[in-house]
Length: 309
Image (tube, rainbow, N blue to C red; front, top):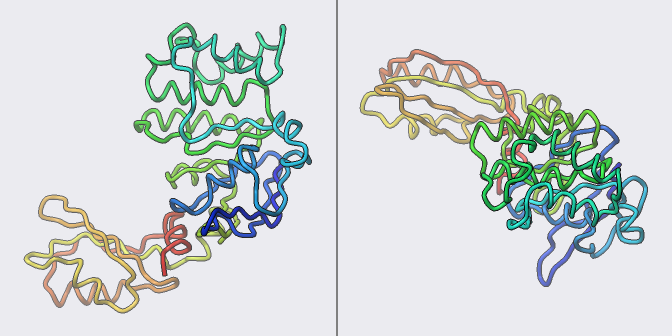
């Protein structure tokens, strides 16, 4: 559905993406991950024909996004990070307008507007002015806009940004349901969302593709990188400073729970540091109520592949 070959985008004195190549097959939900400034939004804007590339090729449903832009866009629904809505229009009025712009007319337009309002949970607010809606409902309107012409592919750039936990859960379920009938390229910083939703992950960093695999396979490559979870009462000790002195420890984070502290110790790949941590706790007379090895998460993979050298 998406094919990108040696794609490069350069600005004056800066290369946003550098010779990247990847594919997204029909029916996949693919997470597109990377730190800020990695090249995610640039890639998505090129795929949506919003901006040209410096070199390379990109196609959607077999149509070159540069040479056959209109044909490619008939297969694409794009929801940018900040959804541009006409806030003085009513929801139904706006979706009809957007459908007409995308070439949907007559009875088909009425059917599609009704379908996307139902699918995106907008029936209760269909006659409301968009400017009066909550952030969550505005995101739903943006998603309905992306779907109104019934595209094969959805490109979603941070679809849950600015939403509260309940709204995030609701939009996440909606995306999973959409994945039954659409190919989806999803960019987000919420990594549990990717683990729960995506069948494959592409990680981009500094304009280059670092990895492309399933979340399970990526975690498997960092079997020991999950590190250690330690719950202890360290008395007068800071805890973090002492743990960071252990050979093989990459970083330590801590949260306080009353008199107890919960430490998450990230270690080198394939390193099991439980014995060293236990020995330190015994030497420092820490009271320990939990010491366990934490399996690698997608966050560990992300940090490992994008951490600045």
